[in-house]
Amino acid sequence: MRAMVLEKSRAPLLMRERPTPAPAAGEILVEVAACGVCRTDLHVVDSELPNPKLPLIPGHEIVGRVAVLGEEVAGLAVGERIGVPWLGYTCGVCSYCRSGRENLCDRPLFTGYTRDGGYATHALADARYCFPLPERRDDAEIAPFLCAGLIGWRSYRMAGARGQGGYAEGASPDALGLYGFGAAAHILAQIAAWQGRRVYAFTRRGDTAAQVFAKSLGAVWAGGSDEMPPEPLDAAIIFAPVGALVPLALKAVKKGGRVVCGGIHMSDIPSFPYRLLWEERHVVSVANLTRADAREFLDIVPQAGVKTEVTRYPLAAANDALADLREGRLQGAAVLIP
Image (cartoon, rainbow, N blue to C red):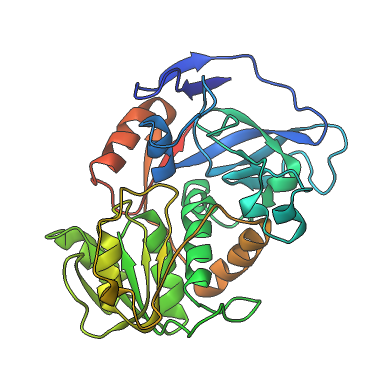
C-alpha cells in the first residue's frame, strides 16, 4: 500500500510504501476510494492536538470498499461501500459509554490521530464504527459527510435543532448564524435552509467569494465575522478555530440564545464583559460524534438534497491540500483520491 505519512510534527507528509496490513478480529481492511481533508488534520499536523500516534497516516473522512473481513465481523460484506469517521473505537465500559455518550469515552481511538487513517490506498478500521454508504453518490462528494457533515449535524443539534429525538434543550434556532463558511458550514447551511431556518453566514472580512457561495446554498445574508446580522440570532455555531469569535457571536444572539463551538481546537477566547453572557445565553462545545449521530445525519442527507463542493487532489498532493486549507484558498472541502 501507499500512504502519506506524518513522521514528525510540523513536518510535511512523506509518501511511503508499506506492506498492506491484515485485519485483526473485529476489523476490516478498506480499499480507500477517497479521503476528505479536514481542519482537524491540520490541527494534528501542526501539533495543535497533543500526542498523535507517530508515525501517523492522517485522514478520517474515508470512503472505500471492504477488501478483507477480519474474524468475528458481522453485518458487512467484501466489496461493500462504507464510510470510516473520526470516532474509531470506544471502550464500551466507562460511565460515558454506558450512558449513551460514547463521544466522551475515557479511552477512545480516533481515526487519523491515534490510529492510522485514510491518506492511503488502504486502511484498517474497527467494523463497529463503519457505516454503509449509498451507491448513488460520487466517492469524493460523500467524503466530507464523514466529519464535516457529522460534526456540523451534532453542532446543529446542540444549537437546539430538531432531530429524530426532538429538540435539544432551548428554542428552535429559526435564525441561525454560521461562523466560518468552510466544509462543515456549506453542508449544514443546506440542511438548515431546507428545514426553513434563516441562515446567516459569517466569513473572513472581505471574502466576497465565500459570501456569494453561502447565499447560493440558502443563506439569507452573508457578511464578515465582525458584522452584526440584520436580526438577533437564536443560535450561532462557530466552525472557525478562532476564539475571538465567541464574544462576537454572543453579542449577535438574543436572550436565551446559544453559541456552539464546533471545533476540536480553538485559539484562546479573549475576556469579554459579563453582559454578553447574561440573560441566560449559553456557550457550549461539541466533542467528537456518536454512531447515532452518523445514522441520523446520513438518513437526512438525501431528504435535504445536500450537495458538496469538493476540490480533488491526488494522494501525493496531500501537503498541497493541507496548505490550501490552512491558507483559506478552498471553497467547500478538499478530498484526496488515491
